[in-house]
Image 1 (cartoon, rainbow, N blue to C red):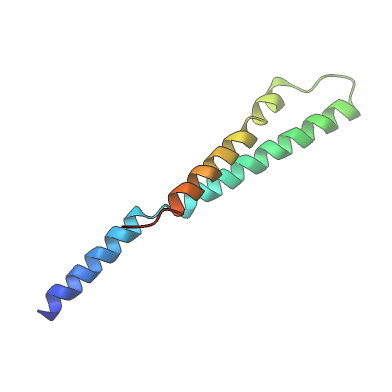
Image 2: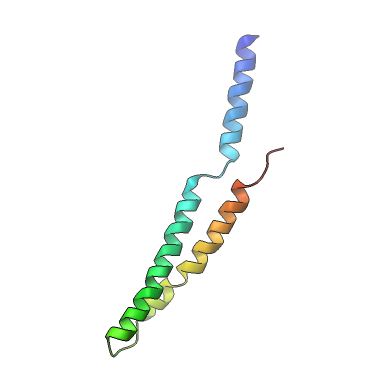
Length: 84
């Protein structure tokens, strides 16, 4: 009987570990957010240091900032859930 209860405990911990969100989503959110911030800063530097307008690539990279914010909110909502 001891082995059966150990298996139940192990399966319960494996189930709870698989339902918890990983840190990968948080790292992805932080990476996207900081890439977007760096692109915003780069746009200001390019605009102030050169005569030309910043390229389309920098403008598209700034979209990573709100994407990272949304991913961080999703991570917070998933990790803050209480288990029943």
